[in-house]
Length: 156
Image (cartoon, rainbow, N blue to C red):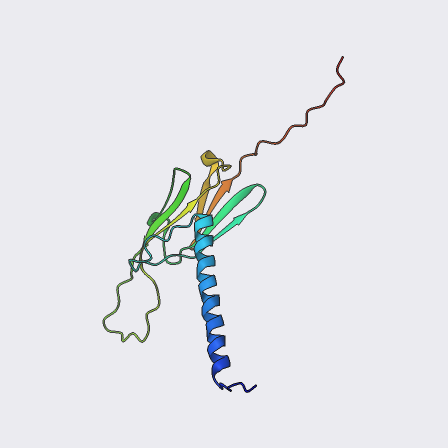
């Protein structure tokens, strides 16, 4: 039996594999955003989003947002219905018309980042600190209801 040789057939199949992987990656990103409750509001309007790290320990959850070039008064932190929302605006510095800019990569404008909190956060003890362009929000965890072992005594 003869088989037709296709010199670019393998390449075509390889591209199909990469497009399949790209689709899987997009679906995973969507699922992660859905699971962690991240809302990407403002992105479609061309606004920028600051980089945010969320870490968790036994004692608390810490949200760290990089906000270079911003001041404490440019940022608001709100909590409503178990959703932590960071909003702010990075104002654009006036450009010197005497200079010929070759590249402008700095992002400016307003932003909104929202995160759904777990139910075990002590909302009345949340703290926020801003230093050197980094906003750090500490969300202490409440002690979860621990199971209590009940001793069984012999009946009479």
